[in-house]
Image (cartoon, rainbow, N blue to C red; front, side, top):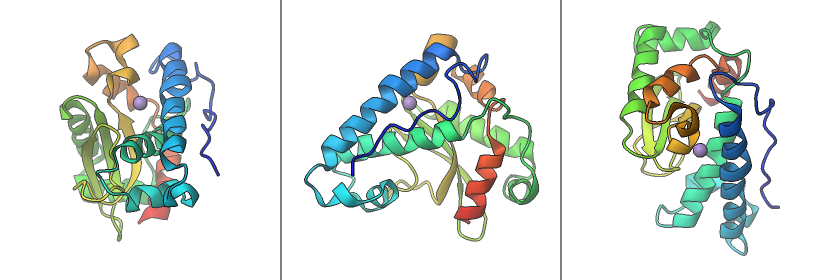
Amino acid sequence: MAFELPPLPYAYDALEPHIDTRTMEIHHGKHHNGYTTNLNNAIAGTPQENMGIEEILTTLSMDQAALRNNGGGYYNHNLFWESMHPQGGGIPQGALAEAINTSFGSFEGFKDAFAKAAATRFGSGWAWLCVHPGGKLEVCSSANQDNPLMPGIGCGGTPILGLDVWEHAYYLNYQNRRPDYIQAFFNVIHWDKVAERFANGQ
Ligand code: MN
């Protein structure tokens, strides 16, 4: 059963002006599509062919470069598109808001930690908000297409929010201004979806 590129859950121009249309078209239609194709090529004829993506990521060996890079790329972008919404932004509510206050002191404390993780990831990678069993939250970052589900990343728990900080995610609109892109992301975060992942992941 081959993996398929899922359609974006909104139009390519829906996140304007925070994330521009051309970037979304290339990012989803070319980059994410490429990871999907290469993941299918990597698993063809292997025991991983019949696994779901989470099982692939949690059980792979980190020296399986094609599986690590393309399985990560497939999963990370699925999570990323769903982490955003044209009516997103604002602040989380309910149990997620309480967990953020417990783990980071305040929403501003979370925001600073997440923005710092995203800004200081050298080169290409991702910033994450993860939940541990029991509900504790952690902010971290990973290189390239790695993610917290993979063995030995040292960035614990289940990812519930992810931000792509590869230059392909922002360079057309923001050029070298990664911090501006990070701030713009906060205007489109789909907190209802993050809260759903929090409830399922803790
Ligand atoms: Mn990307």
